[in-house]
Amino acid sequence: MPNIIHRIGTTKATPEQVYAAISTIDGLTSWWTTNINGESKKGGILQFRFSKGGPDFEVIHMEPMKRVEWRCVSGPLEWVDTHIEFDISIENGETILLFKHGGWREEVEFMHHCSTQWAYFLIGLRKFLETGQGTPYKKNFEPISEWSR
Amino acid sequence: MPNIIHRIGTTKATPEQVYAAISTIDGLTSWWTTNINGESKKGGILQFRFSKGGPDFEVIHMEPMKRVEWRCVSGPLEWVDTHIEFDISIENGETILLFKHGGWREEVEFMHHCSTQWAYFLIGLRKFLETGQGTPYKKNFEPISEWSR
Image (cartoon, rainbow over all chains, first blue to last red):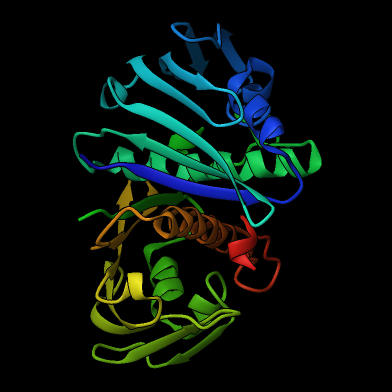
């Protein structure tokens, strides 16, 4: 099954800081969307909202400083049952975040869009880690196409 | 085989302008890298250079206002024989560019990096189309990790 994969790195944030950004609602609102509800704990449901709705994820795995995994339980049809995986490591003194949005059924045009949009938000996450200011939906946010609005 | 796929769109540029940005050396230097040599014509070789080298592509297909395809003939080992495809269309008055870097042999960590880095440059291409100012390597460029430098 096709996957969206990304990688960012920074020498200015620790694994603890990256983990906080992907494992707490405060952190996630700093770079993905400012509209999040739910509980970020194993078995909890996280609800991410954009202008036209958004996905709900079940938290599958949380391993401090290392890994977060979610499964999409509702939202865009193409996303249901896909998984999001974040993996943190250190390479040569740099904190690395590997991202995967896996388990897409087909490489549809919406997947092309989501791949670029995830990169936009992850580049914003790196900015947040380095400067305290991300580009979440919808704060300092710039669209990548009309589908982003 | 795994692929990197992306999508950007703009209401501020025509298919002609997008085609110029992906099919001429002047256009390509505005958003990918400022260091390009070669000939952008069918059968020609295009050489893209970054700090530590870069890929050479053979131009496989050029269809004005519609499509450009290249095949990697040398450069990073993981890239050799992969293909780059650009497809332009209009959807509801918006000019859409679909991008594919296809034919990777494995989802290695370098592929994660290249996926995000391509998104960075394509988002810069959209900025170039809308404002006249892109973020090519290495002009107004910001790294996504130490691997970008």
